[in-house]
Image 1: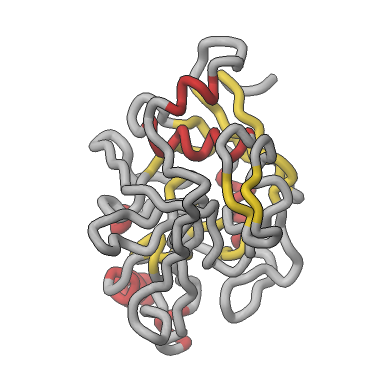
Image 2 (image 1 turned 135 degrees about the horizontal axis):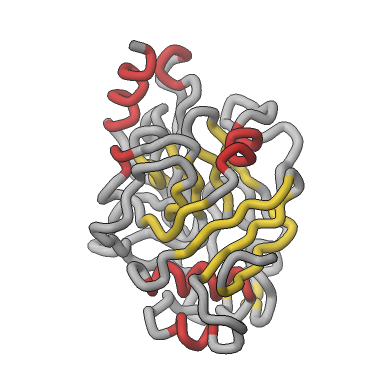
Length: 266
């Protein structure tokens, strides 16, 4: 019954890049939101990206980071350029080397090439991005290195990819959703983009992503799935570290590096 109530509460808002206020303790426990405004966002059990099960943040619509003119959104054709030097011919795999262990995720490059190109380009540093801390455009600098999972929710997901660690940061640009009928939030370990919904007719994907620990089909059509991950037990462990009222880990769980390979690394 508790889970049913929670899912109803979550379905009222989509996972977004902004944190949501707790409606009350009974409906917000174990819930959250995932979004990606300009790369930032938050994820919650009823939507992944713009808002959480707690409801929209005070002030109305999610705040979306303004794109930076020096960097551009990804296009599908970028993927060939970003992966041309990779040896082998297997599927693209992203290995998250975290402070708690490794997570291996197979990327759906053939289904959602633009979304995968964005992730691969940021992970390898081949895609330029805007650093909100230095206020400079970074080239040749891996985006995810050293970033934390800033939102962790048991029985739901872990969320990362925000250079500010606040749920509002991103790479300096946004891009539209990319969906495939073959990619669903139908299993534990789903790798998907956080976002803040559609604003002004444009998507709000950037750099923030989440990995689920349970099926979350209520997120289908709201968040772009771009891969599936193996080490769900580690995802669950990260989701259960001590956290504050905003689902932020008390002790940061960080991504040391994200490596892109063809085929599972040996």
